[in-house]
Image (cartoon, rainbow, N blue to C red; front, side):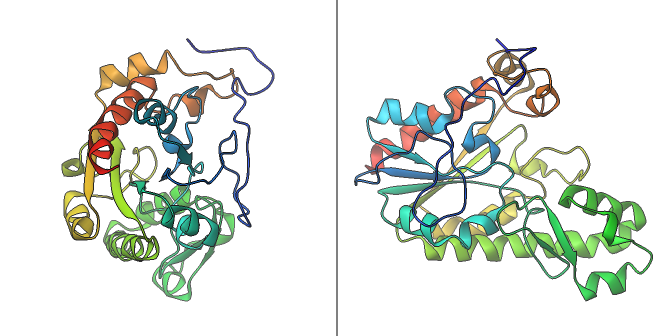
Length: 275
């Protein structure tokens, strides 16, 4: 059940760092002694508000160490540009990559913070030319930025959305090429790839990603595991989240413990045959 009315976070994530990386990962810190499995991804991989997220659940069933390299609100950039993460993944038996949205990446239209990928840093001259009446200085987060651009012009936003989709495919291929281990992609969401979410204000992750994009990267990975949590599973799973009253709004956006259990089960079936 949820922990409420607490002055500090209901969970101690025991944050830790590996090597020279500046990223804070969920602990406790693990020994990087082979063999192990590495998992990279965003908030769900990190396990925000989840006492035992799917990387830990998978470890318990496989009886092999799983290094959780999930980062809250991450995009592909944070991992593709981190040599320590790439090195850890390259030495793993298998690397599981949670499929993340396309909004939190630098592209031809805007740049994001190198570590906090949901933070909008600056607009390119190209997008400033297209959106001459937008004041970019008042925007701090990628979703807010995209919502403002869409509200300004649906026609112009179609160009932005296409750029994000193309950049995501290219960036995913770049990340995969850097990791010298077998790779499994994990789709963990409340919708299927056939129902791509494009609501920049309220839509759930992975934003903009559809089946065609997944098929573009399929030849470069060993498996794509798909877990689509139902509304009932999400509602039931939220009962198991740990959060205080100040964290409740963010916790309501999580998939919950049932989805994590389903992800671990699906990964176990695939990984068991690989390791």
